[in-house]
Image 1 (cartoon, rainbow, N blue to C red):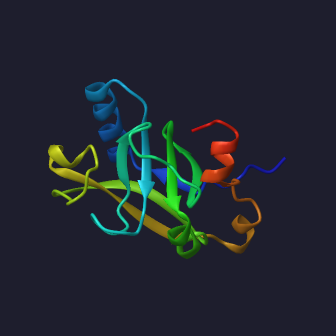
Image 2 (tube, rainbow, N blue to C red):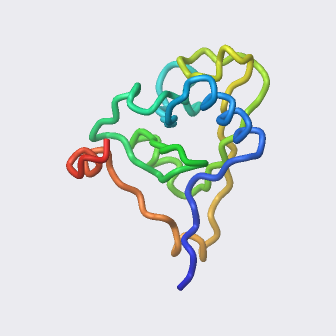
Length: 135
């Protein structure tokens, strides 16, 4: 069986920030990338359940134990790229949990190879997750 290719990866720096946020908030975390206001297409980190997922959101999988969602319109642009969650110094202008730490999450990306495109991990719509009672 050939392994699936993850849609979202993570750097060690981003893992350290998630660990710090988990310790601070004591809860599960999630990410959402909207492509709208508040830092444009920057991924935003929330306590799980603090951001309401809707039918126009796509679940792209888990990254370091956190659900990662993207607005369907954004996903249409990014579906051919592997995303890597990273951090950078500086305050973003969003509601993301890391902002008070003086850093922000960002996405780095690369195009999938033709072979990888045949092995991508599956996605689910927010509507499917709502129907399944998973969110």
